[in-house]
Image 1: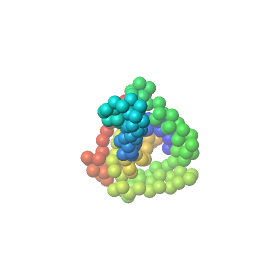
Image 2 (image 1 turned 180 degrees about the vertical axis):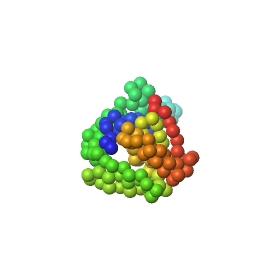
Image 3 (image 1 turned 135 degrees about the vertical axis):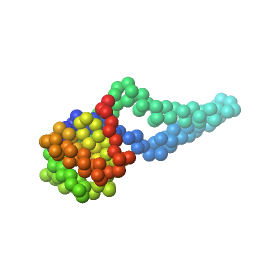
Image 4 (image 1 turned 90 degrees about the vertical axis):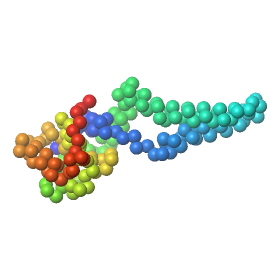
Amino acid sequence: MQLTLEDYIEYNQTFHRRNKSTFVKWGVPCVFGALFGGMSIFMENITAKGGFIIFMTIMGFILGLMIFRTLPFLLSITFGNPLIIYFSKRKYKKLKSLQNEYTIIVNDSGVETMSSETKTFVVWNRILKVLENEKAYYLFISNTVAFILLKRYVESMEEMVFLQTQINKNIPSSKIKFFPLR
């Protein structure tokens, strides 16, 4: 099995999580608010208008929210999230392990992946959830990391039935979801 750049981009576009830290979500707008508030203290001495400090602090906070919360959303709607595509391409080219051919063995104990560089085994109870679409199974071992089992590499209907049986037998049905491609 070999993951192509298109497979990797599709995975990242489909399962991109905005796992930004609390600082990025709220701290940066607060920093903007503090900067604008600090600027307003200087301006207050010049203009001597009351309430200006509070106004500038609130405006800085709103500006910070607009930049760090709204702008990425608007970019994703307008351009199909070019940042995800850019960073996916960059990471795929940088990490040669993503480009290696690998073998996946599924059995009663878990899922094993082997390539020329690595060998990984994950027991079934370590798999958090399984998502499936027309092209692949995604076996998540964390909120953002998954084994990708591409269906185009399943050689026979018997292998597909065996894979589905193992997943259904070892993963609770509440943790298995089918989702169509966008």
